[in-house]
Length: 134
Image (cartoon, rainbow, N blue to C red):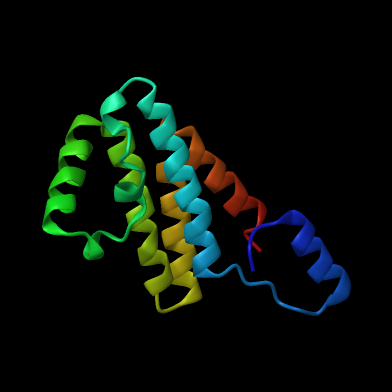
């Protein structure tokens, strides 16, 4: 399910024995919103980013060669946004971990990386993760 506090509370009230699982789709959707929020903040200082929203949000494997080149150009000229993008792409490894222990360890280090950055929208993601860690 998604990270909505009201939805979580409703599930807990109606199904107290249920295990709550936050799925990959909703997790990546939440991260995509943080990525776009980062782009909007960066765009205030760099109008070159205008119109690049979907380059940052799409799966890099599905981009055309032209779009990949454009994304690389944008990453070179926007270090903060490039770091946020790397965080977004790197978290995909979390879903590939074969054990709960490996996944938790990966997520712990990923959260530390984000919290040591200057990227506030991504830090909000970590705060939400920590609030739903169970």
